[in-house]
Length: 254
Image (cartoon, rainbow, N blue to C red; front, side, top):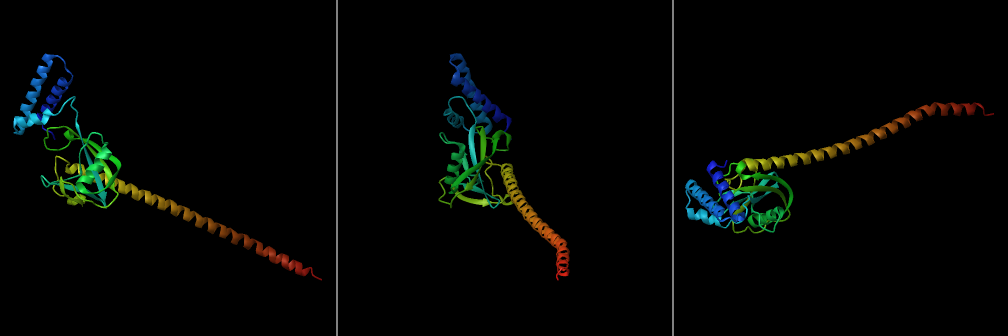
């Protein structure tokens, strides 16, 4: 889980940025600038990173600070999930990344899956929206909302982009080394649970349809047998009467 110092540094930084975005008073802005400097020093001290690096990292953030949106695609094939291997650390993750301005989460995930794995896909349903602070990701300078969208493959695999060097499907019990800042084992386990529920529902739906078909077939057979039984019964009842009438008619012949 997120360490306390990181949470406090991020919170101070968010308050300072919001104040600088909306405050017009020169004295208040001076105080917010001091808070911003304090948050940078806290981040640099605890992360053992140069102050200049932290300053440059947060300098580009303007306006009211909000969590960043990270979208991930969950693509299943035969109960295996699609993962991609990042070039810079050789660790595996779900295809995805930051949501870009002008694109919806669904459009973003299609774009990221294509770039990182080479597959054309279409989104089918939203599986989860998770808060990175509530999951065992390593400390990061930003607060993320992680969006998981299930997608289906619509074509053959094309070329992989520049950020990844491999894409493959893995079963739950043979996952490769994962990139913890992108996705955790517990999150992938959650996705496999969704897949299992979906597969179970499809099985039950097919079974239910089969049972309905069997019921109608059985009903038709029973109706046919009942009709046949009635014909036999009625025929058996009519036969003595027919014979009696036949003999009676014969007896009345001259």
